[in-house]
Image (cartoon, rainbow, N blue to C red; front, side, top):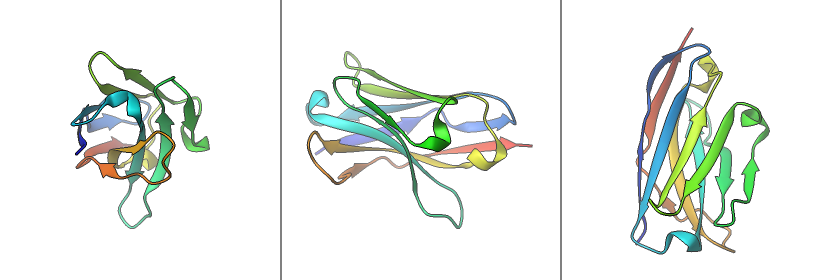
Length: 118
């Protein structure tokens, strides 16, 4: 069973930065793709970006040029560096994992709140 734990959320001003971390455990890290999602109140969950074991990165348009994902295989951690944050980035941010070659995100973290004030 995969466990995912997010950390690093908080309150930041418009234009600020935050770094989120996702700690992965329970299975072989290299066998999974890890992604970041977010969900704002009253909105659907939104895919942001994913990274595979060979650092193949797939970003959504909304994060291009602002958010950077990285993977540390020694620590089984995936980091999301978020810059130039805007109030509309306010949401609960979740990391998720799916097996390499799989099509569904089977495992989810509990989420971390990010609030961007104007």
